Image 1 (cartoon, rainbow, N blue to C red):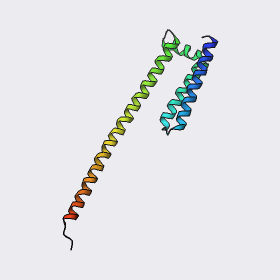
Image 2: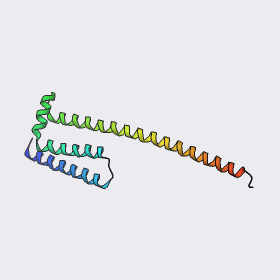
Image 3: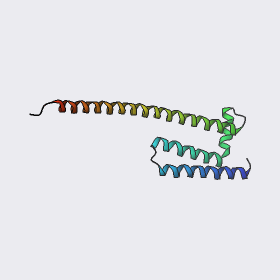
Image 4: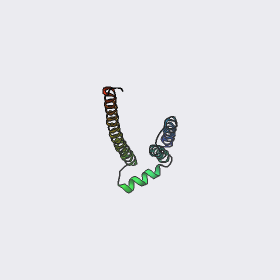
Length: 123
């Protein structure tokens, strides 16, 4: 890797990490997501500062080029994140459906009670 490319990767990685941190601070993010994105950003910085880590890991895993190892690793990490987000979304949808049913039952019960009170003669 040429020094110019390495410096460019370091700058892009640091800017990506800074962008992640700024957006995390602006919004209310769960700890699990916060940790994932911080580790992801730090991983980009470490791999751009120390490219020999990627070279060593890719040779251990049997990849011909370190970039292939990095791309496959990032793809798998992002697939994992999408899967966990899908699971959380499904749980939230189920809770929302349960809440809507609960509210509908309470409103029906309230209307029934009001109708019974209205039908009873006042003494």
